[in-house]
Length: 384
Image 1 (cartoon, rainbow, N blue to C red):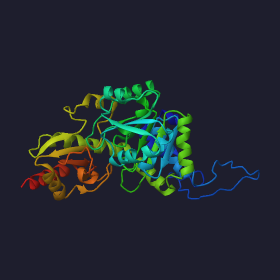
Image 2: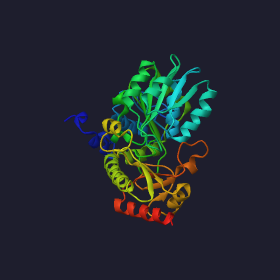
Image 3: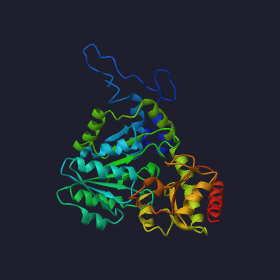
Image 4: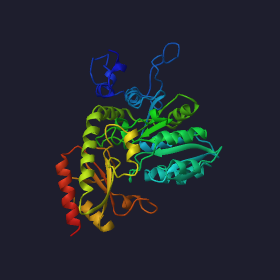
């Protein structure tokens, strides 16, 4: 049986079947050398020259990520999700125009608003779940990149990737998708027409809240992809070898973790939707979500591990609920095996599109009854 015939779950669990030839170890070693011996003819037949642009441990993790995304151009690891996202903008030149979603990761939105204009690049934010609005916002001859985040953090809006890919390509633009929340377990944007897919690998790809990392994978090895490759090589934004080793360790259990977390999230969403102290549950797996049909069509294996609740009684009750939990952790981030709760409006500050009564929930692998009972108790305690 060829390795390519195996299910991705098998391939990622065995890290592509790599066996260390020197020791026959089933876990690849961590390569930390920053420099390498030249051949007698002054060449580098090993393929490694220096630690800033390349590393063997990083290559191992990138191979797994390229497999998970079915990315012909391959995958590039960066020192953070932000570093990976920013590298994707290397395809742009002064005078270009970007479209981005109104609902997206707040730090990247802030970066786009402040840094892109300094580079002479215009950006407009649109309702990315409305293809007609996106098509109207395209500037003919100027729009060069459309950035999508789906599900969109923290309201979990869903973008029809295939529809937006058609709009982007008709305008001569590239489509980049931040699929951090879904992970390759639930979504493969390149198969739906995206040119690039990006993840904050810190989140569910790693899953253990002990690595900061980012990745960009590409649909084709062309001039734009090479600009991203060059941006990392010259900028020195490569992930460290120890972090790549930890990321690889985390990814080996991706399929098990993501399945358990999605099942927990779906169960919690259904129960919280009927809770007396919850005004609304935002989760694409619920039939009343406005884009449920699109999510069901383009996602697989469920709808991910993220949901938000809007608490009756407004911001005060929402904050009090987060303060009263005992099993959930009050912390930023998402995708880890431990469940997190956060009042997002307080974190994002002025200009956030996040309602002040909203709590973002990152669902882990704990027993679902414990998670629900803790939230139920906290919601009731907050309401007095």
